[in-house]
Amino acid sequence: MPKNIQIAVVGSGYVGLVAAVCFAEMGHDVICVDNDERKVKALQGGDTLIHENYLPELLQRYRNTKVRFMSDLAEATRECEAIFIAVGTPQSETGDADLSYVEAVACEIARSITSYKVIVEKSTVPVYTNEWIRRAIERNGVARDLFDVVSNPEFLREGTAVADFLHPDRIVVGADSERAAAVLGGIYAPLTEGTYYQRADAIPGSCGPTAKPPLLNTSTKSAEIIKHASNAFLAVKISFINAVANLCEATDANVEQVAIGMGMDARIGPKFLRPGIGYGGSCFPKDVAAFRSVAEQLGLDFSMLSEVEKINENQKKRFLSKVRTALWTLRGKKLGVLGLAFKGETDDIRESPAIDLVEMFLAEGCSIKAFDPAAMERTAERLPAGPKLSYVESAYAAADDADALLILTDWAEFATLDLKRLNTTLRYPIVIDGRNLYDPHVMLENGLTYISVGRPSAIPPREH
Ligand SMILES: NC(=O)C1=CN([C@@H]2O[C@H](COP(=O)(O)OP(=O)(O)OC[C@H]3O[C@@H](n4cnc5c(N)ncnc54)[C@H](O)[C@@H]3O)[C@@H](O)[C@H]2O)C=CC1
Ligand SMILES: O=C(O)[C@H]1O[C@H](OP(=O)(O)OP(=O)(O)OC[C@H]2O[C@@H](n3ccc(=O)[nH]c3=O)[C@H](O)[C@@H]2O)[C@H](O)[C@@H](O)[C@@H]1O
Image 1 (tube, rainbow, N blue to C red):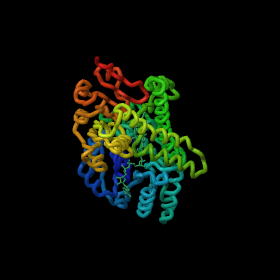
Image 2 (cartoon, protein in one colour):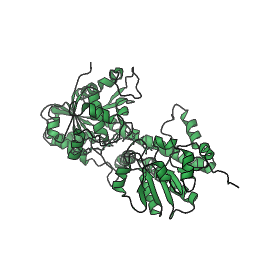
Image 3 (cartoon, rainbow, N blue to C red):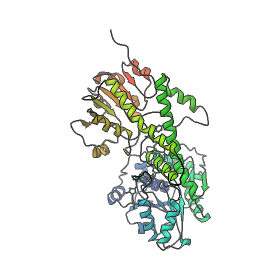
């Protein structure tokens, strides 16, 4: 029978907050720490601060009871058995991971250890970080038998974070002691023993009622590399299909058909073969760079990842050229833009290809009306509205009197627009889709010129 474990989570961002409420959902008692008082107060008040399915329900169910929020790390960690570090590891100027937040938290934890603790790396960190954290804690005077440092990387995706956390394909635990591995085993037991999925009120996801997701026990170094290698490989898949899309454009082939044909091979699989304007987000760009940097620091050549980055950057330039070709010139053109978040169903704009393109079009002298269901507020903080840029309340408002409509983020609601209404709303019936949300034939039937990625353009016959 899984037991209730006292857990502290340091960092209440996309990973820390989701982990905190999901650990509570699994039956544990959690204290979630953040050094941003504003966040702590908002979370205590029930504001999730981020846009994630099921997060409001779980926060409402557990806040100030099974999940408490505070900024005092010493207070938070006093009674707990496990302390999860889930703070940011942003990319530094030299491309490697900035671990200063992780190190600061490790040193702060060290100052409050009085009984055995398991310190858990939930943040994405390069190999060897586990050793550095252990040394930092020892350097702060903590006896070696009073703590262990474990790597437990997180694989959730934004937009489906809660479901991904509770329905993982696998749980990875890198521990160099049996004792520490047993603590993590106890924490995840409600999932690995399957009892969570038998609950009538379980959050729905990929695991059915009889599921028991595997927990891989491995070394700390292997666990750290599993995370970086997994993200890097997913980025490889995306850049590969984008390079294939560009080849399809040069040969009038259809990359969607190619992806289907490739994905039917069980060794390749259909997922992460969606071409577009490239990957973004707070992790792929930084983790690809960090993984390459680790290799280079070890004197190894991982230039393949440089190619992945190059292809990814090039997708945005290719898209801009497509728009220029379709409109003949860009200067003075009015563009409707759908999507600002780095992907659909999230409000996160970190490393968003959509925002990069908005800035590129503004630099070309275009004026833009942009709509995004969740990311406009965050975008406006970075790109304030002005004479050339406005934020509007619907896709049709963005299309109103525009020379073309650009689809930059794969929000589900952008795939079911009223195309006849679009045709009459646009100044010119041109849709340029960076996420391949539509069937070109359907666009043609609605009299729209439709240009997408890796597929022949659909251009209605001239009316005589
Ligand atoms: N966002 C995602 O989808 C995923 C992120 N990760 C990794 O998890 C880590 C965290 O990512 P996010 O949650 O997106 O970051 P985030 O930036 O959304 O959240 C980090 C939080 O840590 C807090 N923080 C920073 N220093 C602190 C300190 N000294 N004491 C207490 N709180 C502190 C910040 O105020 C912030 O609320 C990163 O390493 C990331 O690569 C891993 C899997 C998924
Ligand atoms: O370490 C992390 O932060 C996380 O990074 C990604 O998750 P996330 O960045 O939230 O979102 P994804 O769904 O992976 O999409 C990332 C980017 O790739 C793009 N993408 C994704 C899939 C695809 O087929 N094509 C494609 O262009 C998306 O538009 C988005 O810009 C990984 O999928 C997670 O497993 C990982 O935990």
